Image (cartoon, rainbow, N blue to C red; front, top):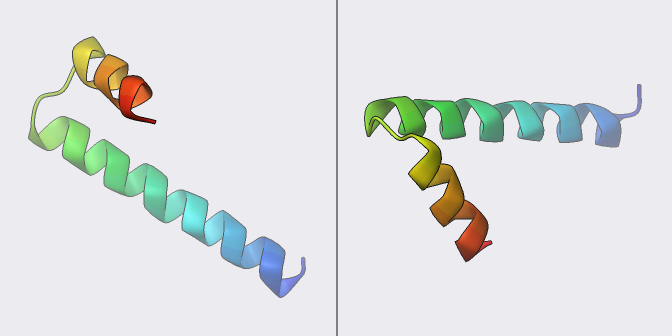
Length: 40
């Protein structure tokens, strides 16, 4: 695996872990995902 590929996998894992942390911390449900989709 190239260094670029490895860094992309690590960045995706960090983003996923951060997203899960915030969703669980604020007790987010479908409305949070809906809002996120609106903003992005």
